[in-house]
Length: 222
Image (cartoon, rainbow, N blue to C red; front, side):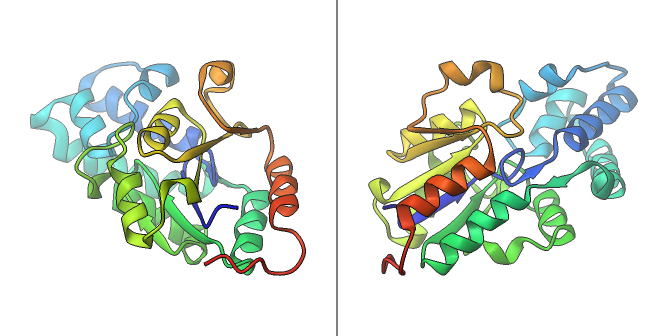
């Protein structure tokens, strides 16, 4: 059994593609006179939003565009972000079993905490690590390794749950097993090519597996 679950945030714990695509597209149109498709935007994912925005608009316009991004993100958040109740069921169940929970997101801390606070889910995680707090962002394993060190656990005691190839590579390069969450993934068509020890189509399917693994009395992990 795993002693620690590491969760990605976007499209794993929450459905936020519409917000992210909208915010980045708005910035691209207004600061770079550029029309970007969702696939073009997703291809830039990995670094936090300040790095992505600099790639879109350039250094000179970066700060102004970044502030506009955050304004759009806050204003449209509640309308465009969906919480997956089934995932919260898993988090609550694992916590009751003594399993630690970490969140590792490519988001910068500012946007990540807007989401955690608006949806009141920050308390579900024992440790939160954001993309602007690691030396090298996903798909590099730096963030996963830092989380392992924080909890003092071995890679084989950890499961990383995410929705993208970036998550899978970060997990495996750190020696950690990976669970591919496909319930709101932009990468569903690529699922066969993403290396994963576990694949779950819905939160309910994952919850069933979790209950089978940790079911019964508290198993005394951590």
